[in-house]
Image 1 (tube, helix red, strand yellow):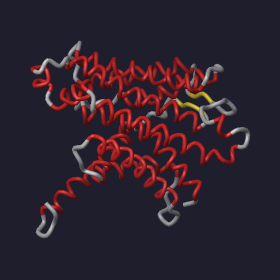
Image 2 (tube, one colour):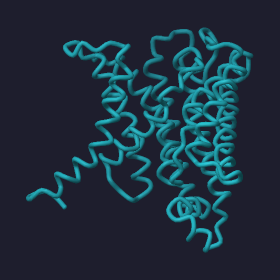
Image 3 (spheres, helix red, strand yellow):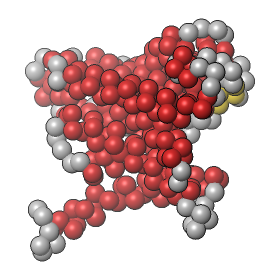
Length: 299
């Protein structure tokens, strides 16, 4: 694998680290099985691409995309806590609806951004030779800010209330916590991060596509599980760090598989590789626990 290919893998991994952090909030902190990510990721991309193509500031486009994602996550939670629709079914309904909404926003199945300004443009200039260095560096800075922001938030009173809601909603209500409000806020935050990732993704890839969100939730879950296996901990800042590292490792493994000529894999095998990696990530914690129980293993 060349250095440029490695940096490209890290670039995509950093973008999906935001997705993984969003999935961490819904699945691990709130204990809310959420498939909205497959719709909110392309929603963020569609909103950002439409605004940028319309001549608006790319940073503003990212902010509006995050707000749109927050609205989709809030809607999923509202269907559950207000109307009593099952969590998984509520997220599926919103995900399906977002497909049509994304088509409406873009007005077409895809929208190119070739030649349009992005958040990276001021640092790259007209010479795109350094894009492979600048884009991962800027994305890494954004991920650090997002991770530290989540660490601070979940150490605050509101964040602790949200964590208590996911851990034991009945006990949280007994302590006077408005659990329904916490679910609404947590799901909005989760999908805001995922939509922001979609907005960044279209700016690195040069366009948005209505089907680009397929499998987003699988990637996010795989990153979370891989991270938990690498760095098992109950300390939140370690958990968020492990999630980011899991996303990076996941994309690196995919890049290595696609660049391994002796294996014979090609771009069309991406879904197959993804399925194998996710399956391995799901089985890995059980294998690790089984090995630990063997004589001589660490308990």
